[in-house]
Length: 297
Ligand code: GLN
Image (tube, rainbow, N blue to C red; front, side):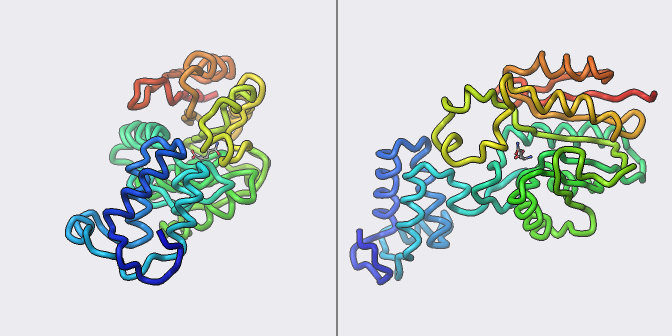
């Protein structure tokens, strides 16, 4: 294939897709065919229907970025970084290297909050206040602001996360409803503030396990967003200890956890005084989210 920007006389959409798929397979990409399709769709601005109508036609232009993007994906950069966006809860989030790519598993947390808090507050006009700690791209807190109507505070230590979550707050038109704080865990928050709900998907991978992760994650996603220190529980200990001071009486906490943390994290919450501690599984059947209530004291 020519790397040039000019028209190609022989390169049809169908051939472009087939060649991209082959190269991604050779590079060891899982779901190579699907990724090749997403790259083609986005780079050429071609819908699925257009593709089937025009697949034997030659594109007028092969943009220079087609080859660049394919190379990045063959180097195992996550598709979301290559494209610059991903979908989460049906909403589009800007992503770039330096923030964790939003995962479908994390939708389990968002769905649980929407359901449980909706049931708790049926008919109520109170506007719940919610904190998303370690917000990264902002995917959890911003989708809850958008879909649940809550007043949301996002917090993160990473300057890149602050930058990206600001872009996403603007993209979702949530400037009025969402404030963003930059700092280490609770240190960044306005003193005296209280939240009805705290949510977090903190770094929770054991340091030693990081080297065994998929190349996309190990070599491209930020360590800071993954590393839960020696036993993976570092941030849960801090959250369990400090969250109660930031919750309104009867406030709720929802934490994403690793598949093997369905006993350790609930135990930490219970030891810190949380009650009604329950665990929810993700669509794959793994323990994924823990919820606890901090009683009136
Ligand atoms: N809250 C973000 C997410 O769920 C980032 C989490 C993190 O950086 N550990 O994608």
